[in-house]
Image 1 (cartoon, rainbow, N blue to C red):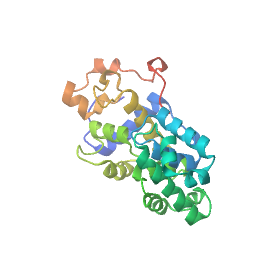
Image 2 (cartoon, one colour; image 1 turned 45 degrees about the horizontal axis):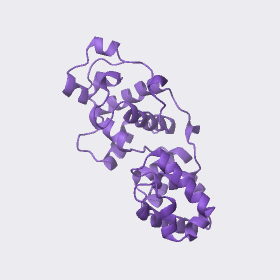
Image 3 (cartoon, rainbow, N blue to C red; image 1 turned 60 degrees about the vertical axis):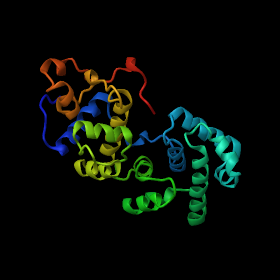
Length: 253
């Protein structure tokens, strides 16, 4: 692990990838666990919502209405009730129906498989033109399901990138998508691992409040650590775990 602070944001980004790849272990491109349509709709449901509540909302929705046509045809109030475990069901219900309506109108069926044949930028534009689908959601679908060279940046990835110094302290999440992608190889496997590992790191180590810096393997070049604790000492680095210990709790989805 590095024991000195690097000045280059691109160097920090690559070191972050190498270290967390070892800390959490590499994933394969087959890590994507859901079909494209499920990834899209579930990600809409997940906004400011726990994974458990998102899964419950998704299951209740399909149990109540059977399939995507049933969801599209459902009274919006009944759909909102079915997904009531999400943060804003009254907002998400009409958005989901409008997304389904556009997909059906343009493609003739409820499928996103055509995105695998499109260039990344074209797919990104098509997805983000729909209501409730931002850069993060579109990037997740394109990377996870179609292995496009694009990097999703959620709140955890964004927070860690700012704290470590991979991006500027005022860089928005949308700006971070572009900057971090410039720092990394355009390799879907690298991008998937970078996203998932930093997501896990934000969930389990680099918390929004009271980050667990003692456990963090990035402390050797992290701006936040330097500002709060000074340069990482050899003793602090030696005491830092090299691998995620399952005794600390299961990793998120």
